[in-house]
Image 1 (tube, rainbow, N blue to C red):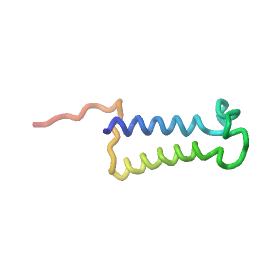
Image 2: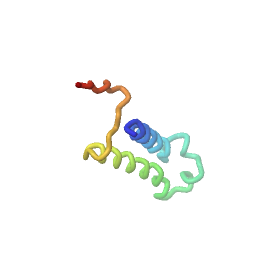
Image 3: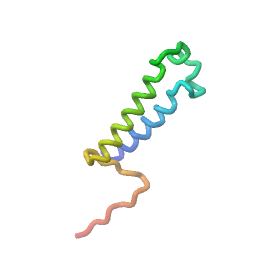
Length: 76
């Protein structure tokens, strides 16, 4: 489960950046070319979800296993 939180966080950050209206790929796509504030909803939602995951991690309610971290030492 710890690895799941890392990958969810990574996917949310990538999604938040990729759905920004100023991103070149999304600028000419359907919801973004009509204008208005709703263009920012996908990016803001993914960004807020990523912040929520980081907040829960900081409060100690979830555990994120970083792939580059060393394995814990088992003491018997």
